[in-house]
Image (cartoon, rainbow over all chains, first blue to last red; front, top):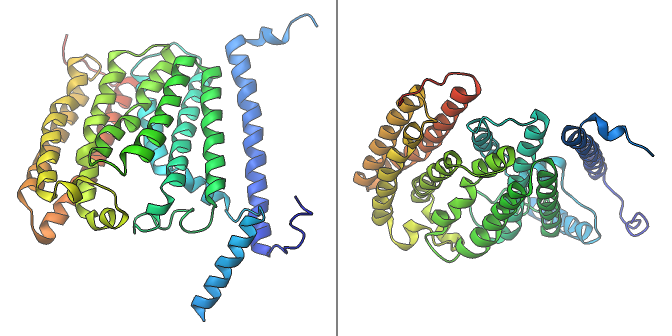
Length: 53
Length: 318
């Protein structure tokens, strides 16, 4: 993707917007992980971690 | 000169978008979710949960509410993707991210579809598949039935399409109880009946906008006088329906008083809208009805929330 866009030079404003989008995406993915973990614990209880491997 | 530089900037933005470089900021993506509508969805869904007095894990209830909000936002996003052409010609909507050129239509489509699928899936995992199915149906109804079909083809668009906006309390109740009961159906009916007077009051004021965009809103098709009569007819049905929670036992004393006074207020304004048909006073009273209808619905649901969520419930009957 970076190579494909190498002919373009991002303006500082565009770089800032891309950075903000990246941070928002990262936070969203982090929240998603926490939500899925919380759902698992809430639905199955802490015993979900206590099983034979 | 200014116009020339603007057009150059637009061309640059277009070429960069074609190269896969998004131009949107986080706030633009957030605006695609129609935050104000999303707030209304969360609020009515929360009331749908609270009146059910569910015995449910609060984390699961919170996740369910969050996913209903995300699903509502996703349908708003897909609506903006589909309606970008008409949004561009209406003064009320021309600054939305797609017509303003901040976000490309394909970005909005991908964003909306991802959030739709994600919200339905996680709601199903967190609560049950009845709730997830209802949320999927709500998104489908709003995007396909309302936005793609009814909105541009019939003046009954917002009457039938209003069902999508009325479903969140039903989805919420299904999420926390696993079934749909009368109380959420009554909340659905109240929002459903509230929608025509609310939107037609706005359409009376903004009829020029809708006409320019080619949307067959009631004032443009049946005329302002017929619209005024229909606003009054729906309000006559809405005012007693607003009191139905009292008779079904989940609206207490405070709700009875507020729904009575609010219903009379709605009726008084609808009669004024019906009587005043010319000039500035007619526009002003239509605007007042539009604004008051928001307050009315908010007060009804806020009172139910206070009664069931904070222990202010004092039964009127029995």
